[in-house]
Length: 173
Ligand code: IMP
Image 1 (tube, rainbow, N blue to C red):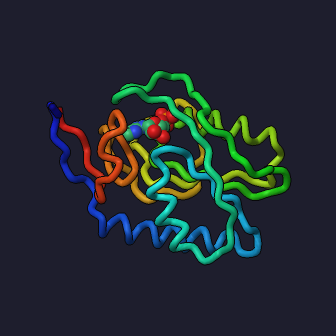
Image 2 (cartoon, rainbow, N blue to C red):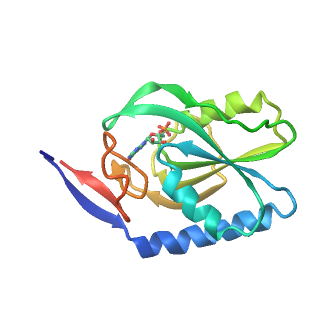
C-alpha cells in the first residue's frame, strides 16, 4: 500500500515545450560536432528519448548507469552500474541526466570520464534542484529549476515506481 500522494508539479505540456527549447540550444551549440549523447540510467531515459527526437544535429547514442539513491535518501556513494560502449577520446560528450540534486553523481562521472580524454563534456538535465550544491558542478542545459522536494514521473522513480507518469509530481507523505 502506498502511504503517500503525488502532487503535480510540471505538466506534460510544459515539459514538451522546454525539451524542444533545450534541443534547439544543443543543435545550435553542436553544429558539425556529432556529439555522444550519454543517457544516465535509469532516470534519464524518458527525457533523453524526447530530447533526441527534437534534435536535428547528428549524434551517437550511448548509456551509462549510475545509482546513488535508496528510497528518498542519497547513500552518498556512487555505483557505476553500466559503462559507456563508445570510446571518448577526441569526442564531444553530453551527459543526459534526469535531475541534479547535490551534483555528486555527475561530478564523479565527469571526473571518471574526463580521464578518457573527450574533447568536451557538457551536462543536460531535465531538473535542477534549487539547493546550495556542495559539489562545484557546471550544468550547461536544464529544463526546470524545482524546489527541494522528492519528485517522480517522466523517468524519475521512488523505489522503482512512477517512472511511467507522463508529468512530474512530488511526493507528499
Ligand atoms: P545527486 O548526485 O545528489 O545530484 O543525485 C542525482 C541522482 O539522484 C539522480 O540521477 C536521481 O537518480 C536521484 N535523485 C535525486 N533527487 C531525486 C528526486 O527528487 N527524485 C528521484 N530521484 C532523485
